[in-house]
Length: 152
Image (cartoon, rainbow, N blue to C red; front, side, top):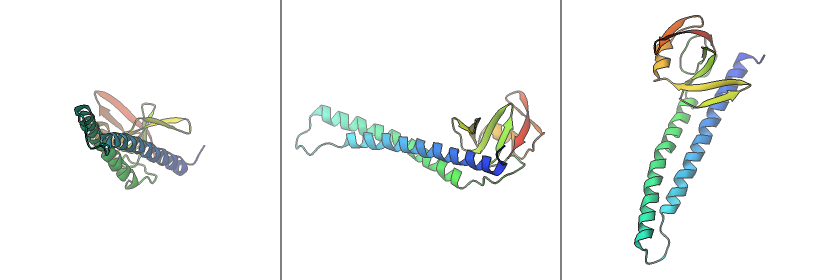
């Protein structure tokens, strides 16, 4: 079995690479629409050119929000302590109900060394329900009781 510190570091690294990839995709969309919003150097542009440029400018603006959101998530990941811990708090990896969660930022599911994880934010109701608990302790969420199986 991998030592716990190395396992937790691998989870952190995967979390960071996921957000970096999401940021890169959001930037690519933003830049593509921004480029399409630029009118060429022709002196005359017809109504269709102007409408298309405006639509692409609006789409670029819409993709700016995800770019900023992913920047913010990366900032949170970089500034969260991922040291081993025995209580549920920021940076903890918590297992309960046969699932593994990383307390930092919300993410889709991801795999590390054959285990599936999902990031949850520090504002999420489930995190707030289990904050400061230890392995073996229980909490209720959405009418269900859960026992924390492991924390690292």
